[in-house]
Length: 181
Image (tube, rainbow, N blue to C red; front, side, top):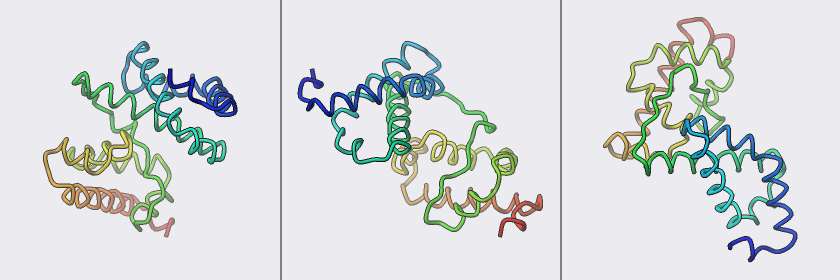
């Protein structure tokens, strides 16, 4: 029913984005939910939310639109998983390096190759790996991580800093960080 409120141009934008990106979004949701039907529902929910923010979508360049949609699908899938009480362990080898951000640790990690970071992450204690998984793979906010771990939000930031520093230290031990600096 929400689509009836869209302007004709907005309807075309949403339809085009849906047709071009449906399979990509379904794969992203299925990777989290491990269920095809639930993944389709998550993609539908993501597009309903995107309809509400069609102005934002229109203002983004095409690559950013795709990122926006994939993030919406992942979050929708995570919400569905949380609603059902499901927990999906993520193997360390699926952990991706951090996106560029304001911290020096993040910038240094981004310059390392994915293989170097994955090797270092696999050597981290489980508690630090979990914090990195929550933040960068599952894309949870600091508040969501804090609720999951039962700690304060400021404690999550400390854990993240320690985890990133530990990854850099392990990469330096392996001789990878020197060539990056």
